[in-house]
Amino acid sequence: MSSHRFFLSASSEHWCSTNDYDFDFNCTSIELDNKQCIEFIKNVTIPSSVNKKGKVVYEQCQRYNLTGIEISQSEITEMNVTQTQRCDAGWEFDRSQYKTTIVQDFNLVCDRKNLVNYANAAYFAGFLVGAFSFGNLSDRIGRYPAYFISIGLWTVVSIISAFVYNFVAYAILRFFIGATSIASLVAYIVFTEIVGPSKRPMAGNVIWLFFAVGYMLIAILAYFIREWRHLQLVISVPLVLFFLLVPVLCESPRWLISMGRYEKAEKILRKAATENKAELPEKLFDEHEHIQMQTEKAEKGTPMDLFRTPNLRCKTLNLFYNWFVNNMVYYGLSLSTSGLGVNAYLAAFVSGAVEIPAYLSCWFILDRFGRRLPISTYLFVAGVACIISTFVPPGVGRTIVAMIGKFAVTASFSVVYIFSGEIYPTPVRSIGMGMSSMCARISGIIAPFILILGNYWEQLPFVIFGVNSIIAGLLALLLPETHGMSLPETLVEGDAFDSKYRCTVLD
Image (cartoon, rainbow, N blue to C red; front, side, top):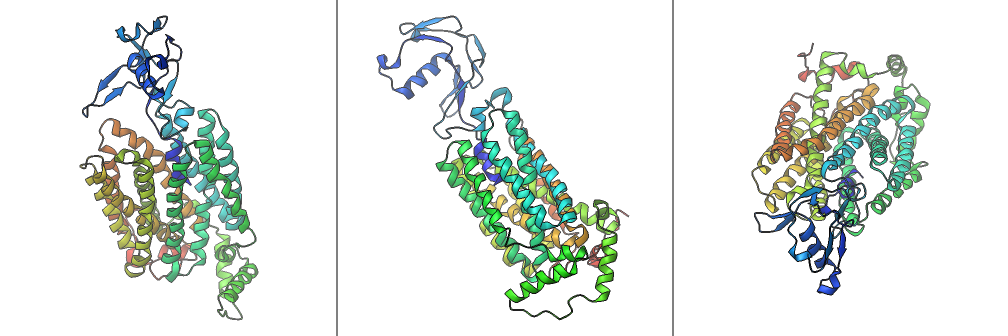
């Protein structure tokens, strides 16, 4: 759902309003239609210049100072005013592509144009808070209740955001939308804990295929729904349908076992076995497992456990940086589609479509080459593509190179979800995934401001994305391989996991 932000905050051509000027003429009398009339008045009242392509470009933040001057039809073509002033009477917008956006409704132009980035940053700041709070909540009260609490709050604030009429309220609601949309992360944790090692790449990437389809669908909806409030409602109301899953979904058996609730876990597992026509032993948990899990429960995981030993500390920090870079590059490329030099709706649709082969590639590659080498390769390719794109002029060429980068970073983002879930031990898996997601959202907060650096040097954002992606790809080679291995169930197992790649640097 986050991909619709581009269309809510899309910019369009704008110029100073001249409604406060006293014009004593009408365009009909000089045989001008409405469009020609607008251009005629702009030519008289708005300073302009001719760009390198020979196109007339009007000033967007200044107009000629005609205050107190009565302008008749006979005088208008003879005016020679040079004194200018700021747009103190508001702005007019070209609504041929976007009927309404938050930029138009809240006048986020000129001195206020960077407020759009603050709204995007507020969303990721909320996601950061939500990742930690709901990650902790799901470890405390369970995945199932945390998921539906998140969905409920997400639905309410998303719908309310379509009815706000000032920017501050909108930005605050974007924060809460980010904080409550963490339901997707909780769902992914449940998937990791339920699906066996051999099926995780397939199941994990099938989930993301639906995300890609949603991305493409939003581009189509935005094409037909050009008013941001209507678009926000259309994508928010269907969240209610998630509550149809209340009687269908169940609690994570692994979480129940880690909490010592064996009877309920066994009931869920036996029901699943019946549905899958599989057989389970009569005695599912022996006394040794009970004692081991009770011990683990007594030392219930906390965020500090992720850093308690040098080996787990190294893996945690490496994963944190990997999530940080993946999210920064992914959203940096997504938010910059308008600068590719092609139609915005087409660019967004292609940006979503390119994710489908990315997820499919993960599906097949992860089973054959594991996790470590693919994520390293994907990040390296994404980094190289970002850097190459800085040398390609806007248009089809830059779009192709940028989409190669989007393909690679999409695939690496998919892998890091699976990879992280397999590295973090069960007692801190939700906390680890939540804190990893927090790191990703920090980069999401930063990404819009990195794009602003393009005002000073156009290529700088893509250089930053590219260099960090390459570094993250190389560091990923230091992580342990998890392909075909059982999930670590305790903190001790998590520390000893794949001793071949033990880290002692931060001892």
